Length: 320
Figure 1 (tube, rainbow, N blue to C red):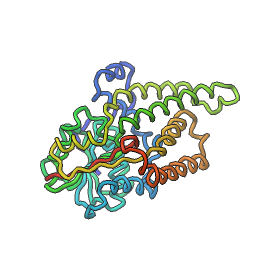
Figure 2 (spheres, rainbow, N blue to C red):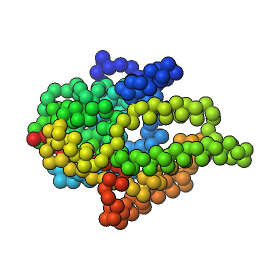
Figure 3 (tube, rainbow, N blue to C red):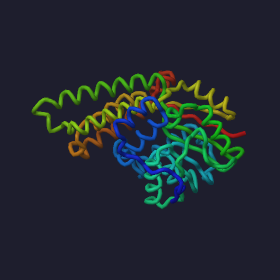
Figure 4 (cartoon, rainbow, N blue to C red):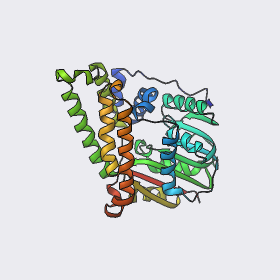
């Protein structure tokens, strides 16, 4: 598990001055925010590398690529974060070896550490998605999860993806927020945060309140999050961007409607209270509720709700 020796070191403790500068510089904000979150990101988003998340990642992939002949040889994850998508896809048999890239040195470090712990053949680079540091025709597959909405020039990034793909190679990007879904998810999150942090000021519930310093740090992170989340997507517009970049056989899918309406308040509540207050019973409720509502979305709501109302967009295409 290797990274380029010239890659910059992580900066997990941004100063107030750096945060202020990042408010006007989205790429600096990407680095600071994701370096800040890297070591706790898996815990924050309940990410694991076991059957639960292997099945989740494979489900997102199969939503648009269930016809793929597996395994692909070498795969790249763009904007890898902690490696959630690629590493779980590799464990499910989607690819034999991989590379991870992210603008955040902290995320690349954690992704490579996760890959090493799993015994997977993965290398990594700190890289801008708009200028991917690999040669033409290098990869059989490029994947990403919740990354395109962070990239200033999405079409340029997709051109780069097609450049580094081998002829006939495929890309799959999942977890992109729809415009309508992002609207209701943000309001649900803001309402849950405001309610939780207000109610836990009440003396009988103060044991459920995180220390104020931690809440303040979460608020500073949230200020950067508002800068790093640049885009939302209509599924049809995202498909158009992919075709404009040169992709062929473009397909999209959407997922999570009622599941998102549970998931976002749950995640926000978890961020607002001490972790030791949430035991196995809570985890069972959160994951079980999400699974039941996902079944409802896939089997009922998909038949009556327009695709653009679902929270997540998945897009796939090929290099000609």
